[in-house]
Image (cartoon, rainbow, N blue to C red; front, side):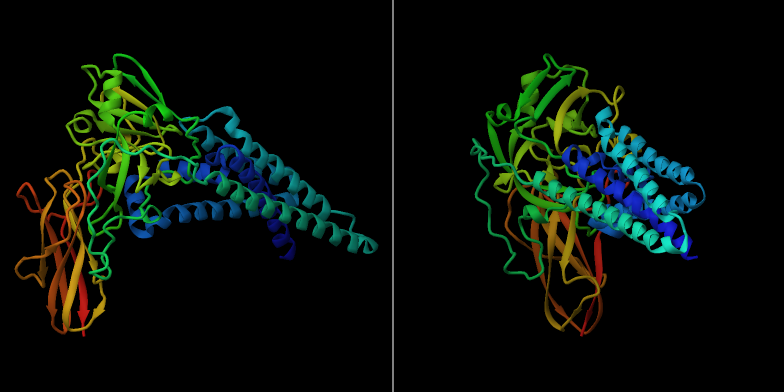
Length: 502
């Protein structure tokens, strides 16, 4: 039994050594080519939509960490098997390690923008893992004469210690390098030609527990298919506009920010947001009108979609009619008075008011192709998500929390509501225990495409109570109470929760 455990640990140690060095090489070149991240990304692409939605609902923003952890668990288990195989035939163990790396290499090459040099981390992992396994196997199989026993054990310990140190050093150094590369660039953005109106003071200090009226960059939700954060320099970035245009256009970052910049307060919402979910955020965005860029290229008569592509080949389809109907669709370069954070699309991303992000909010965008849905389809379109997905009006209860224990008497119920491009939020109503709907008080107004805070003072009596909230839109409609899951065009339904009054 001890021998089996020892050989299994050799396979695991050899694999971790290879992965640590591969992670370092990927951090120095392209983080997405790290074998574990490449396999994880391939798993995301191959996972059926219902399972993806379940993961987001269940694990929230920790879904990526859990996915990477699950991939690592699988790798470690197979690495242990490789070690056991090497106990009997070294070449069998080495072959399994090479097979593991081969799967990672295939995942790397499956990336839309992959090039052959992206295989370098996988090649490093293969070479390091096999050499480490060979070293451990030879140390373990040193002559087992009585006088050589101590030498045998010393050799195994030296090999294991050296490889363990190498694995840790590679992994830690890779993380440090990644952290350094992810530091913000020192960029001063021009002032907007068309600034936003002064931002009103919200209810943040008046209603404890309510969502902040403006979401800090560090707290803004992030939902995308990336397990890494692309490192793109503003100096190297370009945007190409092609397809059904009068003249193909290429802009540098300096070209873009030299155009007229506008500033707008816009709430973004992810289509994966369930009723009452956290994937919505309000920010002040700085950028160039998308229509100003399209006008430079000259849009043809046949296009019905903008196929946007990010730095790594990810594609998103935006209905051309909705992007150019007068709403302030942006190629954004700034967020809340700062350059875009890298995790939110630096140096340039799309922001289109009133549309879910999966059809509008391309981060790290590098290409806009004017085309038709019949000619080309994007990542989410291929997975049967809707092509036309306006954000559905909704109200969310932030306080009190579900199943909270509150004291009898006056209880302040509060939250956030949005009705982007439905003429904004005209009102919010609250219902207690299925009774009549009662008007809540609205917080300040930052525009139709920005959310509103709201609160309602409730005289709570002891017992268990159900609280519900709904949005009334500026165009005279009430948000639907019909329940729908996020797939294929966004969730709907009234947010309702239970609290206990003592």
